[in-house]
Image (cartoon, rainbow, N blue to C red; front, side, top):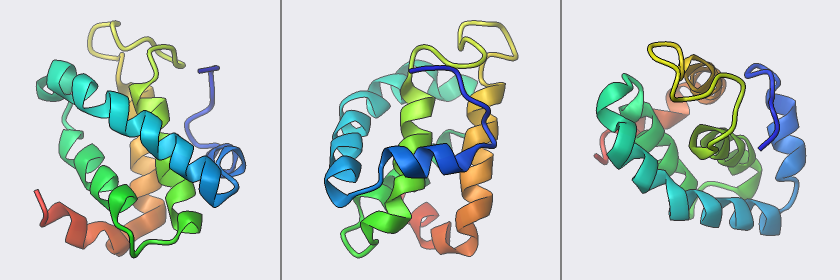
Length: 118
């Protein structure tokens, strides 16, 4: 995936601008998310937030419009190439944290029930 500014959330929405594109993005997340969390989950403080976002993503009651930003953020998280490489000690996940934090702030209290599912 190309480099991005973590706060440019509109870019994620434009990439997943239809129900079918959100479904495609969800499939990518499903394929790769658990591997990354297994491998690095203990090293990152926001793993629980990522799982809550995934739970939100797979909830059939949530419209695809609301899922667009979540798909983009989770794909950014699982992408091996991003603004700050994940292998960089201590700072490798700062950009991922920025993206996840921005989405958490955007969705706000809408995510609370998804923390209770884990």
